[in-house]
Image (cartoon, rainbow, N blue to C red; front, side, top):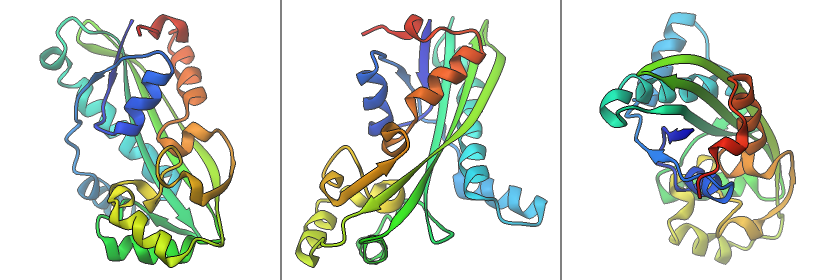
Length: 214
């Protein structure tokens, strides 16, 4: 049974590898901002954090599945799409991209607790076509230390790590020491909930151990 990860996220790749899976990798090429803006315009409202991450996870998986014959001829397995966003005080934060934005976020987050929302979409693909789909959103609360110094924050931002990750932090790398507590499955905060993926695969008739290939 093959696995194709519709993502270029190093964190999601690492999680699957640690779980015994070496997936095929392909970028979904989805214009996330345009997709969300179009949907919100049609609905006449703003998507909730859970809706936001699930919509994007589903779009990413579908975009790769549509090109499966070209990307991986003869593919027989599951395609996984994922998306994550961090929510603090009702405001949703994606990747900051800029140092000034990351610094502002961390000034808000120090000593506080927010929620990481992670959307998952798993497609069962065989014979060049999608045979089934299972989706779910997982959430985990994240509490940050209250004594992070400005010097530590400057050093963390200078590393570049927080600029390209949802919420401007990581659990599994340089940002880990600045996180005090996690409530929920830790892998949710890293990029994908492994227990959620296992459950979704099972709903599609795929036993998790059949995905182990490392």
